[in-house]
Length: 173
Image (cartoon, rainbow, N blue to C red):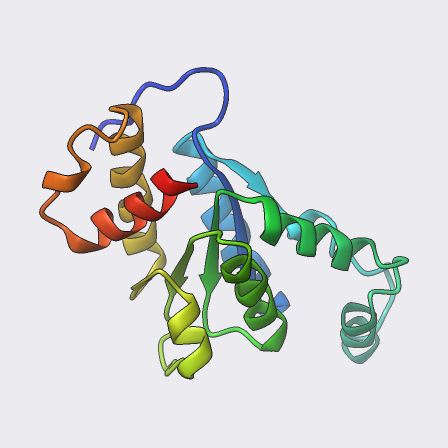
């Protein structure tokens, strides 16, 4: 699918909520979203433990945000101000909190199910649209961006319910 033409400003600002164990996947997804013209609020650039820590010490550093609360503040603000939050599953409680922050602020959430994930009631309900993989998420975002570029003129006639649902949530915002 050819990419739509956009003004110099990014059509969507996106935050990807995901576990630190998915850092590489989140970065790759962010690279592909940037290629679609999106602006990324990228926590992976902020969540960098000091060199020389053991894996256990890195986990403690990540869990306690030893960087003066900067990682937490960045992620919280990103969830509240992004146009779209993408949940990269299966992730832990921090990503679940981020989804909750976004949903509570009225920010649409696109969920990528983990391979063996069965999201609980609250996570399932807070996500606007679920997909089965990163490729599906990229396709969905690309199709929604095409509707945005056309000023949402044909969104109501879109045959794909997921595109209509996510596009409608973004159009409201």
